[in-house]
Length: 99
Image 1 (cartoon, rainbow, N blue to C red):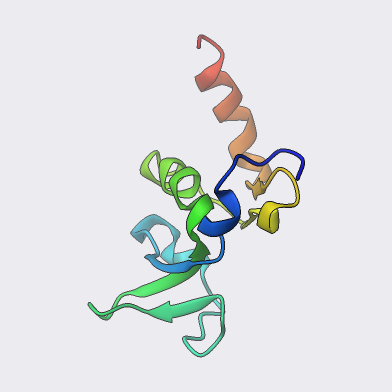
Image 2 (image 1 turned 120 degrees about the vertical axis):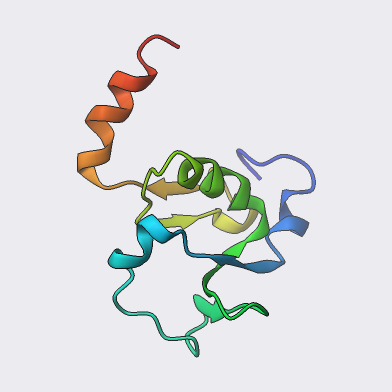
């Protein structure tokens, strides 16, 4: 199970509805609550359904208002991926250059 830590498999067995941040709302144009990737939470918010193991990484990006296009944890079969828009990459690399 290259690239995963013990216990990751159990985490990605569960998916959670995560509210779509306000800054991302204009980009979510194909929202369908009946689709398995989307849903409405108990508070009536439009959500993405994400594997629990990747939620911390996604929400860390969203907290900094860094948009994401897609993500996949690879379900215990390797390193996951998070796709960012190309326009995000240049400012991000400049922002992180001193760290």
